[in-house]
Figure 1 (cartoon, rainbow, N blue to C red):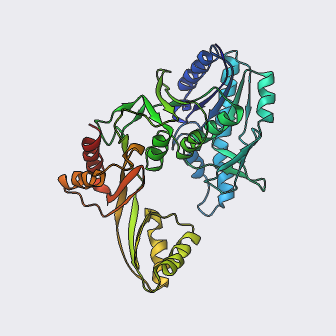
Figure 2 (cartoon, one colour):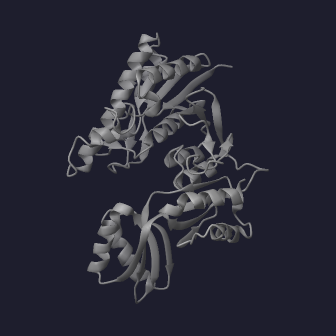
Figure 3 (cartoon, rainbow, N blue to C red):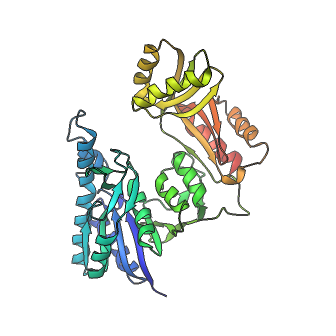
Length: 395
């Protein structure tokens, strides 16, 4: 039976030149044989250095440009991409119209550069679909409550596509990727990484938040919170390479994958007095400065946490102004094992630490949740740590 509506996402690499855009058009022609209507969500064309890529556009303005100005500039790449692809679709005989994210009714919470989608008014999209078989929409963007253009953070076009798919009641959301699958690890860091033909939305969400870059974390979150049918397709072959399912998988390895995060600096701060009151003050000062913190560990009046590498100096100035004793370590990164199936199992942390010990890597700090165990390691030990953890839990 023919599907009524598919939502499709093409990333910037998939649209970076005329030949690749024609490949994208070919995929759309094939999809229209199985679906009545198509909503295509696009990223800016290319990557840094290409004329309309987001990072290229940002280099056109000075660092002191406001966050709101940068948002408006960054949104231009996706607008150009949508208009260009719509033009090429029409040349191929496909009736279509392009919309910006805000024209498509996407409303955000107003956070510049890293906004969340709070609602979607689908009236304009439905109007386009009533006149055409296809709507092309600029991803990565929406409109804030005060009428400013917002962007959704790097990789946010995935989130645009999933949220639009949910709002429109699409039969499926298809994310075309230039990689051949969702993998158990980044193949560039772990050559023995395995393809995952099926993954639960919860495991995908955890993998994304721990640093895996195939699907944007908020897209995975949106899929987990809905009944959306989400599939990853190979841009090269057009085939489904990974299907995202709602329920945890049975009879599979309880560790789904390993991942690593960005480069960070680790801080250990020693205070005095009532621990909760003391660290509430410290954490509030750092949060108010706009610095993002991760890997919190607090024991009595000692706290450990990480911050992005480029925030190290700002945090040091805050702690110095409070006359606090602290130490730093870095550059570091977080390495993690991921799998909702590990919850309640005994000995997982022991095996995790034993694997690092076998290759002579110190876990500078550890944190865990019901679906992840993570360690802070020196960045030059990252790949060795990932490979050994993958060997221990997956191979």
